[in-house]
Length: 204
Image 1 (tube, helix red, strand yellow):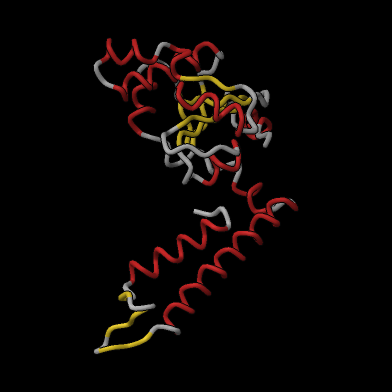
Image 2 (image 1 turned 90 degrees about the horizontal axis):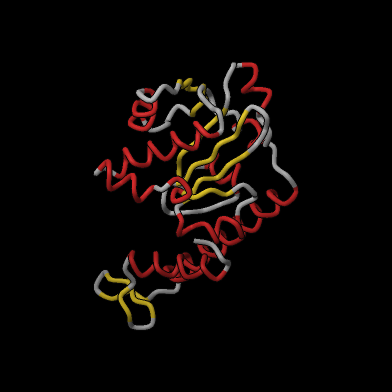
C-alpha cells in the first residue's frame, strides 16, 4: 500500500481520505468497515494512520491492518465541539491538530474529498492538491486471497438468485397472484429470501 514515491514526486507531505465502508479505496487500504466516517492518512515516508471515533477504537485495533490507530478523542474532540458549537468544524480542527503534530502541510486528497473540511483547513494554513487515486491501479491486481473472496461472494450471489428463481417457479397462481405455501409471493418476500440466503454465507 506504499504510495510514498507518488507523494514525494508531487511534493506532498501526505495523502488523506475520509470515508466509510462503501468507499472501495478506504476498505482496500485499511481492511476496516465502519458506518461512521473515518480517516486514513499516509505520509511521504510511508507511515500510515487511521483516525476513528473513540467508540470504534477496539474494533479498529482488531480488524484493521493499520497498526497506528488514533481516535478523535486523542485530540479532545468533545471539547472542540463545545467550543466550536459545530461538529463539522470541531472535526476539521481535530484533523488539523493531527496534521500539525505530524508536521504535515501539503496534502494530497481524492477528487471527492469533503469541500468543507478542505476549506476549513485551508484557512488554518494547510494546502491541498486533488489527485487521481493512487490505489486504483493496485486494486485491479488481485491477490490469491482476494480472488478466493470474490469466488466466495459470487457463489453466494448465485445461490441467493437460485432461491429467488425456485420460489417464483414453484409458486402457485390464483386470480393472477402468486403464492408460496399459501403465502402471497410479493417482491418483498422474494427480496427477504435473497437476503436471508446471503446471510447464510456471511454476506450482507
